[in-house]
Length: 165
Image (cartoon, rainbow, N blue to C red; front, side, top):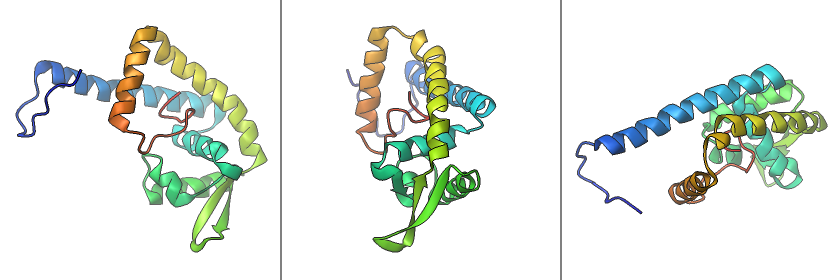
């Protein structure tokens, strides 16, 4: 059920404000907790984890840096700095893009795949404990439909991204 859009900028109702503020508060808390856990147990930030998962799911485990930026909430310069850090850590290789010499591809290393195997377990357990286990199957279904409708499939991360399970 959709509520009627109010394009004139009138104040939000108490229910609308509670829904919006609740979403922001819960999202911020969950991401901070998942990020802290991944850093403590796996030595990866949530952003690094998300980039590595995108690469793991990509054909040939490679993706243009600009495409990574388009599929995450990170800016192009933010992704570039993160990829450079992942290169220094031995988790990613940066190679020229054959189709466009100005661009670069990020490619997973075998070490990254090994780290992801344990990081995925940690991340999934964190998502379950902090989010999914707090909801009924019906609530999960409704939320999934809401996020699909609001996201319209644009910019969604893989099924294992840091912003999702």
